Amino acid sequence: MGNIVCKPSTGILFINTMGAANNKTQKFVFDRESSAREIQEQLAIAAGYNRLCSVVVRSKTGAIVAVSSTMGKNTQNDPYFVEPGGYNLSANDVIASTVKEIGKQFRQTFMVEEIKKDLYGRVASVESRVEKDGKRLMEMEKYKLDLHELRNSIYNKSHKTLDYNRLRPSVTLPDHFYCPSTEREAVVSMQRDIPAYNKYVLTHETKEALKTLQFDVWQWEPNEMLILMEEMYENLGLLDELDIHPATLKRFLLRVQENYRNNPFHNFRHSFCVTQMMYVLIHGCRLYENLPKRDLCVLLTACICHDLDHPGFNNTYQINARTELAVRYNDVSPLENHHCAVSFKILAQPECNIFANLSPEQFKEVRGDMIILILATDMARHAEILDAFKLMMDGFDYSSEDHVNTLKMILIKACDISNECRPLLVSEGWVDCLMEEYFHQSDMERKDNLPVAAFMDRDRVTKATAQIGFIRYVLLPLFEALNKLFPELEEIALLNLRQSLIHYEKYKEIEDAKKKILALNEPSEYQHTEDITK
Ligand SMILES: [Zn+2]
Image (cartoon, rainbow, N blue to C red):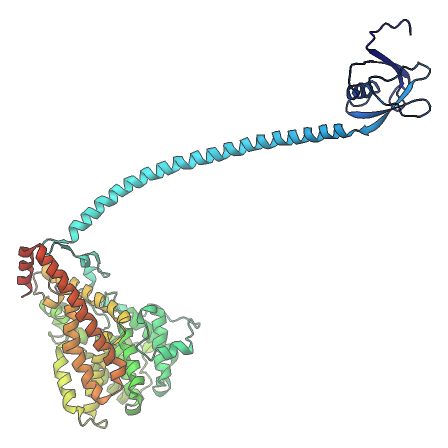
């Protein structure tokens, strides 16, 4: 040992690393100022293990020698044996904290990536929003200009108000309104065939509701209305009575539907309403008790056909504009004659002829009745027909052909104008439709220098005034006359009619109040419009 020079603070040990490679004794020098932990680590390295590997030091006898800076000296022949003893606790802590640290750093790295991504996303969305807002701003400017233009176009200078009626474009193109040519009538030829499968099945509830005026006629699509019409024929036993093949009825109804035009008012839905009203009366007034089934069939069918191919312009227009229809029918109910003629053009097709199985005599009678009923819907004949009916009312005789014919005429007339007998929610929409059709006609008349009727003039008529006059002077007298023969009508129709009158009277009060306010603001302007209405 003498040949080894070392500082007093240096410790020397002879160690034998049994387990490690080169099982041999070696000299281990350590600093006595080192901590036990540091010496442990140096021993582990010297023995060929990982620095963090806990080593156990034993004497020759196997006794454990505590590792410390004060470890006693030994000799080369009596070395300490250094064995691996697994990772110590503090080493575990170091590993754990290292792993934790690495994890943290990983997470932070990922978080940075995420934050970066998030930021990129936000920046991109802000950029696109700025771009969109820019575009929107430009669009808004454009809308502002459009609105300004629109406002100018509906501004009524004399009233200093906006006339919103001018915002509603007519559904039908102007040239579609003119009287049909023979080319147009070719539409009557078969266009579509009926579906071979059953498309709709009506519930018991629907079938029952169909017999009442609470039935909301706006809720049904054209195809559904066809099925509802079929149900009426079925329910009244008309298919059996007149030996109508169900497919023929379907084709007939389909052809009728195709030959109604898309007018604001005189369209297929109007035909459905009139027919449904007749169905309500047949049930509500028990018409089936006094009228034969063939009459019920004529009543329903006449309702279905009564406005066929209506051009959206009334008889007065046809006559004043000297349309082809007026010329053809010599100014006598040109429209009604046309509706009737189109009906029989449809019935002339064997696959649509629901009267095909009647005898020639019966067909002649049915045809005569259909013509009488459809021609009776010309309002120019209103007073004439109502007066005739009033004369018969007291001693009404169901065995008199004359009486029954007049009753049937009154019935189809009542159905034709019966919208106001329905609940207001259902009926009010029809007023707008009718006024739209009227305004369209009066605009056209003004353009063509034809006489304009006051009740069609958008500057002279209002919804309330039109309705009050019509209910009071046309509808109430008509339904009150019918009511004498059918007391059930009080509940079915008259209650709603009176309510409707009250509704429009209130409506008019509001309109008048608005006018007064306008008059206060602009006395001279109001005076001007007052003069016009007188
Ligand atoms: Zn009608």
